[in-house]
Image (cartoon, rainbow, N blue to C red; front, side):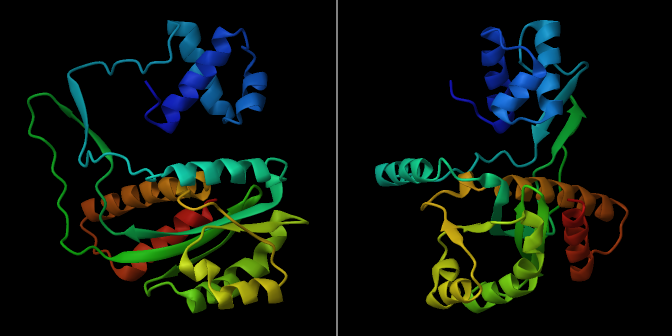
Length: 261
C-alpha cells in the first residue's frame, strides 16, 4: 500500500534503509534530507519495537478530525506525468541552494482541521463555524537561507498586483538567497503575463516555471501547511478567550507566524 502522508513516507523510507543495514543517523539524514529530530524519532521507535507504526494511545481516548475530507492531490494526465519527468531531468543538476520559491495561498479566520481527543461515550466535539469567514490572500517567498518576503492582501491577484508585490517584497530581500539566485514560480496567468515577463527582464530576474499541475513539487506548500496550522491554533485560542477577532488582528497573527521563520 502506498504511503498516505509525508510522515508515513518518512517512516517507511527510514525503515527500508534500516532493514538494509544503513543505521547511522548521520548517514540516513544525508541520504534522505529528513530532519535530525524525525530520523532519531523513527530510529528510537525501531530500536524499541522493531516497527515504525504509531504506538496506541493509552486509555479510553478517541481521536478524530472535525473535518475528515480526503486530501486534495493534482489530477494528472499522462502528458502531465511525462512533462514533470522531463522537467526533473532537465533540472537534475541545478543548484537548489539559491532557489527562491514563491506562491500564493488563502488564509481564513475559521478552519476546522485540528485533531481533537475525547473520551469514549462523551458527546462528539463540535466546532462552531461562521457562515462567511474573513479571508486573506498571502503571497510569500523563501529560500534555503530563510524567508524572502510576504505580502497580505484581500483584493484579487492580477499581473499588476503581482508585480507590485515583487517590487516591494522580493527585490529588496534577494540578498538572503546568496549570489546566483533564481526565482521559481508556477504557471498562473498573472505569473506568465506579458507585463510580468517584461518586469522580470527589466530587473534581470532569472525565472524558472514549474511544470503544469505541479503544486506538490513546490516546497513552500509545506510552509503554508505549517503556517495555517499555527494560525488556526492561535485563532481558536483567541476565540476561546472570548476576544473579538477583527481583520487587523487576524492579519497580525499571520504576519507574526511568518516572522517566526
